[in-house]
Image (cartoon, rainbow, N blue to C red; front, side):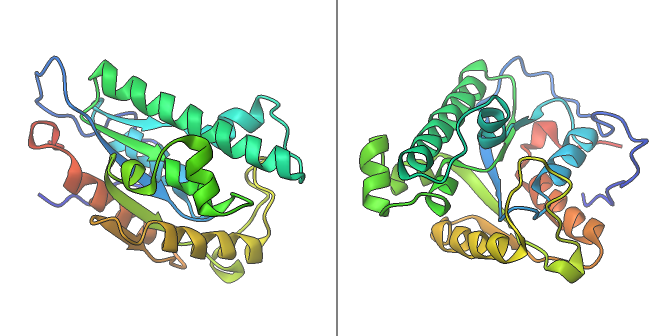
Length: 220
């Protein structure tokens, strides 16, 4: 079933319910990625308002860390320290979802590979310091949805998010890095920017819907 998703803010949390009576799930993780200002937060907020309670959101660990006062400096130690902290917080958030088994689908505001786009040294050093690998981290995620960054004409702004420091040129550069980082994932979906953001959001929401297990598919 294909749904025409509502865009009104009058729709409440989980406006489409499900008939699932399962006491536990083995949740799949789906990454929403893309450069700053791509619309990830807005799409995730819409998803929570639309889908049932078994679809949850894993918050962006960078926002959790930086809003809590973590150093945001341009020195090499500060940049590396921030990305190590973001990786570890993201990993713990995902582990909680996996071990709680309450969600059928968890939408991650960025994934653990996103740190590579901000890492100031080589990729080899990144994986060595975090004692992991690209293959190991990529295999955790069922799918990746990449929302492309809009240009100035399509609505890019850094003023709507106090955690965002990049101008449109910098955001585009990060976006290109993320496209490269995730290109080998077998279930990657790239959602292009549109003049009308709701067109872009609806495309992303339909992709998300396709990964919701049958027991938790929306009913009207």
